[in-house]
Structure formats: C-alpha cells, structure tokens
Image (tube, rainbow, N blue to C red; front, side, top):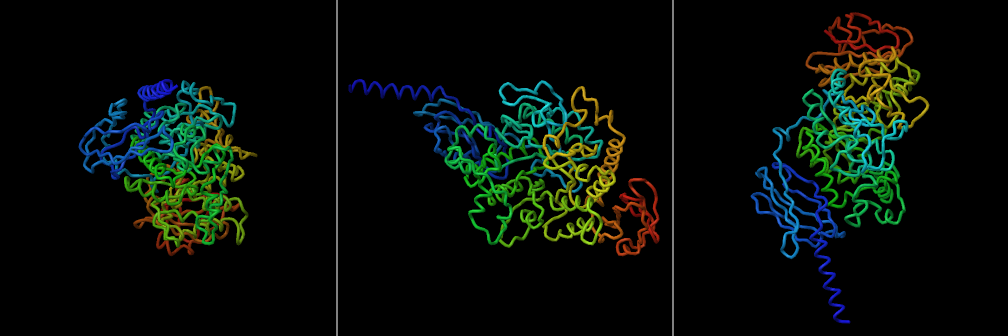
Length: 622
C-alpha cells in the first residue's frame, strides 16, 4: 500500500512537470511597448495554463527592472511589473519563465522606438468636423473577410441587426469622398474584436482589447488606414469602452480574480444585476450610496460585463491599452463610450494618464444627459463643489442637441421654438470650456437628423447651418449629408443602414451621386459647400460668439476673431422678413456690406436685411 502511495505521488509530480513544460504562454498583454514613454511603469498580464508556479526572470538589460511578479487567485495568470529607465533605448529583452531554475519558455519582449513627435501629436479641435462612421455599414472593400470561420456571427445583409460586411478597406477606399466633402476627421464606431453570437456589428461588446475584429481587417490594416488618412489631412478618432466588455471576452471564461468584474459572484450564479442608469447619483449631494453602487456596478446589459476599475490590475490594464492604441495607430483622439458609468476615480486616473503622455490629444466623453450641469461636471478645469478633478478635455453636447431639435420643430412662442436653442446656449457659463465640446445633429444611437425634423428639408438646412457655424467641434453621422432617415422606427439596425454605393451591385451610389434623388443631391452639395467653407475659416475655428435673443421667428448670432466677423441668421418664417440691423450695431459697428456664403451674393448691411423664407444666411462681413 505504501509503495502504491509513493508511486502515485511520483506519477502526479511527473505529470505536473510534463504539463508545465509542454505549456506555452497563451497571452502577454501588451505584447510590446515603446521606449521613452512618460510613465516608467509597465504591467504585463500573462495568461497560460497553470503558470502561477513558474518563476520569472528578466534578461539583464540596461534600463529594465523587474519590480514584482504577482500571482493571482487563478493559477492561469501572472502579472509582471516592470520599471523602465527614463532614458531607455529601443530594444528587445528576454522574459524567461522557469521551473526549478530551468527555463521552459522564453518571450522576447520588444520596446519599440516611438514615432518622431508622438508625444506632441495634435488632437482634433474646433478647426475639425468629425465624420462618424459605423464600419460595418459604410463600405465593403474586402468581401473575403465577411465570414471568419473562428468567429461566431456570419454576414447576413438581409438582417437589419446582423453583420453586413463593411470593413476597414471600405473606409480606406473612400477617404477621398470624406476629404472632398470637407470632413477633417473620422470617428469610427469600435473596431476591436466582438465575437458575440448576435449584434456584433456595432462593436460595443469587446472580446479582445488588443485585436481588431478580423471581419473588419487586421491591426496592421487599421494602422495603415490611420496612416493614409493622416497623409490626406484626416485625423482618426478611436471609439473606446472601459466600462464593459463582451460576455464572450476570453477572460470571462477563466476570470483572473474574484473581483475582476462587478457583480462577479452573481454572474457565476447566473444572477444578472443591471445598472439603474441614474446618472445624477454621481453629483447628487444627498445621494444614498446604495444608489451609487447600483449605477456604477450594475451591468449595462446582460451581455456586457461591467469591468471593475477599482481593481488596480484591471485599471492599469485598461489605461495601458488605451495608450497602446494611441501610440500604435497614431491616433488623433479618443471617444469614450458610457463615460460616467465607470468608476469616477478611475476615469480621473485614465484621463490624466492619457493626457500626461499626450498633452495635445483630445478625448471626448459620452455623457448622454440633457442637464448641462451633469455633463459639465466631467470636464477638465471644472470647479466642482465636491472637489472632483479629471483631465477630460471634451464632452458630447447632448443638452444643445436636444435644444436645437426642439427649437427647429416647435412653433415660435415666448417659451417655445428658437428660444429653446438660445437659452440652452446661454447655459455655457456652466462649462469649463464650451468651445471644446462636440456638437452634433445625430449619431448612431438616435434617429437620423432628417427624421428628427420630420423630413422637413428647410429645417434640415437651418440645422446644418447652425452646427457648422456654432462654437464647438461639429460631428456629422455618415449619410446625414444625403438625408438618410428612419421613418416610423427607432430600430438601431435601420438607423445604421448601409451607405448606398458601399457594396458591389448597389443601385444607388452616394459616393458618385448615381441614383440619388434631386433632394439628396441638393443636400449633399449644400453640406459640401458649408463644410469646405468652414474648413478654411479661422473665424469659426477660433472666433468668439455673440448671440441675440430670437425675434420675428429669426435667431441671429455672430462669430468674430481678430477684427473679422461672420453673421448668421436662421429664419423659420414662411415668408421673407425685413430684419432691422440697428439692433446689432454693437457688433456690426460701421459695417455696410458682406458676402452671403450659401448663395455667393453680395448683401447690404445698411438699414434692413432681407431674409428669405425658411432659410439660413451666413454673411462674411467686409
């Protein structure tokens, strides 16, 4: 019996050694880094079967110090913490995984050289107009990647909620259209791997934070898209999500720690806890902590696990991942999804560390709320009563978007119509930097702008004139320029319909104009003219703003910079009106004439101005 016992023990030890020796490290993330970053600390998350018992050694190289090796609750993970010298040179060094002092696996880790001027990169700013693209729905440049054997969801263009085949090559192939229209930046909905069973096309359920979805292309294709865009004067903004991942993320099948995601115990017991979506709990001075916990720790939907950024390893992982993509793809900005849902202190750390690495980068956060006080709370330099400080430069101006749509659609009254837009703008005193907000008529989560204004083309023109002359950074959703619409439905699959001409065999081609209606062509030409005028207009990019309370169904405001002025008149009247210019003397001064941008006609600024019915006027003042 004793002999049998020793034989069993010997067999177990032998099998353990064999299994470890045979085991390869499955993942090291990030797989490489760069020399010369501001933060000298580098955390490596290592994944592989039963690797916790291994010893880790770093090849002796100048400037690389092994600070610690952390063994997590799950034996399939290790965390390696390194410290890099400030003056470290690009190099490769060996990370050796050992058992009983014998190396069983070696990973050659690379610190790459940074591109010249990387830290000083210029982010998107008020001189830009962003073109928002849902990659799956824009253009299919490579039908060969529509279906990937290893990924769950296949192409089905007939399914409004399915994958349609748009990809990175399709976007790259049509960058000239983007440039010709007058857009100077593209924001793509998430492009990282989303290996979900359904609705994977939208990209918001990440299953690998370091890999572009193969149905869109490869990491290298994405990097080349950014490079090509940059060579054409087009900036690229990456859509990121740190609040949640997809339930099919590789680590959800083998969680590293007991608190890797929020409500993890409930998840393992198949008990879902959703977020309350009560965003005011963050700023509420009377809030109950149970409500804060429910909002910040609840899952967005059952297929989107809420990541626990209070876990320092998770927090470091997410911060490094964001920096990695900026450096790797040479990005000009980040749009952060569901900004306020993440841990508040983590978002302060995340923004400040990103901005420390890239002081001129721009980051815009999504805080979908119509109270500007809630939105303004998150912006850099905002003086909050609770002392909260972050480094977020920009936010999506949801309050203004709501007010503009109401201002256009409502009948003119003392408390209705354009006064709604005027008074919303008057709330700018609450923001630390209103000129750096992103303004927009629509996006991928709401009705198309043409649908919002009930397919009234006159109101569409007024709205587009407003967004392209107002303070802030305009963002236009793909297809808005050709009056894409979603009548009678709020279905996201319809809102995010395919851009006509992006697929071989499309009967309508918006890239060339073939098959577009007369109204669509007119709208496209109208937007193109305004966009290209704005592109070269420093008054709109850098100018201050003065507006006058709406009267006679018309809203008048001015942009002015270094002695130059632009006057904007938005009239909802069914007939032309005579606008008494005496009211605007404080800004007009002695100006007597100007040029109207849309028509190209000269206009007199003596006495009264004739304003056409239901039309905008944009006047460059001499």
